[in-house]
Image 1 (cartoon, rainbow, N blue to C red):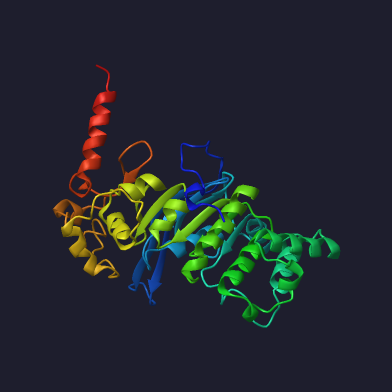
Image 2 (cartoon, one colour):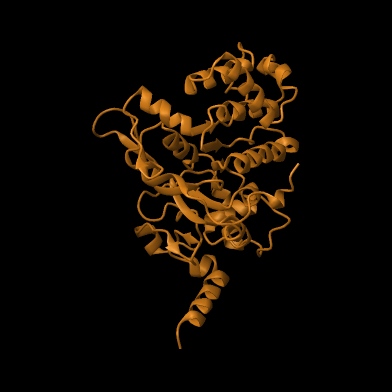
Length: 360
């Protein structure tokens, strides 16, 4: 198994590949009830991201933050209220069944629950064979059979012929999830949307499944979106991490930098909840630690920064006006008006570096 520290080299160590799938200003609202006066839940607000060939982007946040909704929008399972999804720079239109099928040949999704994603009444062969025949109808019977063996070998389920004849209940959780990955891989996609792919697996096999995905990313130059609530795993698996809170991206940047020195108070809370022995950052601010007792509560404020009701650094400006993603350096940004209080050392260092860079 691969060393986690060698997974998916951080930005700057290799040339970035071209953008395959892109989201621009995605919004998704759900009406809670009927009639014109029904309340509206803003599940996703102004989310933009780029998935590049042979790279992994992690989307991190607690339950209910909107991560899975973003995945469904990118997969075409939900239609955005506003915003755009582009594949190879072309606007995606799901105008009919044929167009949607063509899109799904390029963009595949791996779901969180390996127990619910496979029909218990069918052998493993059935969902894989169906995916190949649906998306690659040009293949004959013998070619399809060879393709099933290939994808099973790719996800390290050997002997492949034996696993294909098993029922889902005869597999472990990790084996089921690898079958789900094989099903996605069978249509030869260029984008893989992995929605909490290891959260329901035993800790002992999580790294193994992530390693399978990482090897496939490298072998087939996949653009991968890794959705997780475990920000520590994002550091090892993804080159870039986007932190999501209450439907919004509140911080983004290279995974290593973000995990070692988080800027946004919410990112700091996430890291405090997932201790990492390799993290070099200072202990969490005591005032911020006390606010963690509110974790899991939906934001009560609809005006201003949505994290302000949990943030000890919030002032009247925070409660009145929602902050945009403000640049910290060339690669990082955070949606926080009070970075001078939340991350004073980081802000001061960036100021000093900018002043040195100015011409004399």
